[in-house]
Amino acid sequence: MTAVLEASGIAVNFGGVRAVDNVDIEVLDGQLVGLIGPNGAGKTTFIDAITGFVPSRGRVALDGRDLSKLSAHNRARQGLVRTWQSIELFDDLTVGENLSVSAYRPGLLATLKELLWKPATAFETVEETLELLGLGAVVDASPSDLPQGQRKLVGVARALSARPRLLLLDEPAAGLDTTESQDLGQRLRHVVDSGLSMLLIDHDMGLVLSICDYIFVLDFGVIIAQGKPEEIRNDPKVISAYLGSAASELPAGTT
Image 1 (cartoon, rainbow, N blue to C red):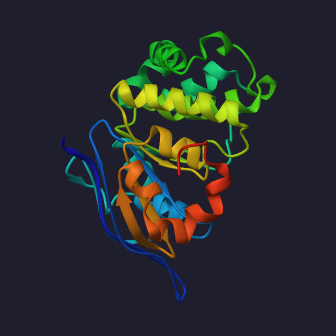
Image 2: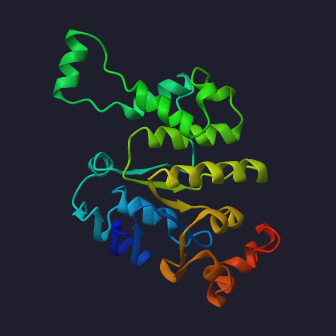
């Protein structure tokens, strides 16, 4: 498999604090890759860095193209799309309209058509995305009327409607109960199996260990382990740094 994401030597400093210390992470085509670690390990900062939201050093390449000097919005236009820990949906719009906002990419031709004729739409993309995540029945609903699990899925769907090459998910299962988290995991796995590569940050170890193909473990800004889920759950360094405190969250038989 070819590499979709190649992030090499990524480093972020906040004053005298090295939040991310020369991190190398690769996501292959068609992979769901997990990035885990304790609170404060630098996981979100790493995503902020490679998506261009914080100054950083190192190289970020998507499908071999160097994005390191691009702004955040231009990296997103190239296909490096992320979600945020807070859902940030537009509650005054319907679910379908939330996705349409993300899917709409105005260019010169589209702008002229909108001015002279009628607004451009991306309904086919929106409809397909909602069906992919099992949200077709709520296309006309207000996000504020949905349960938290579905709101999280709408947030993922909105990111997907931007047609990413790689989707980076930051804590999508935060605030979900076990059933909602399992449903989210099944939906994410389905999306990846449909052909999209994904990098997932989450503290739900049952979720990460059950759906990811490969996992990186970050601690104090440094990668301390990487491997397949069965290798990670049995790695002494990972157990000491992280899984020991998270063991109560794991389903029976996963440790």
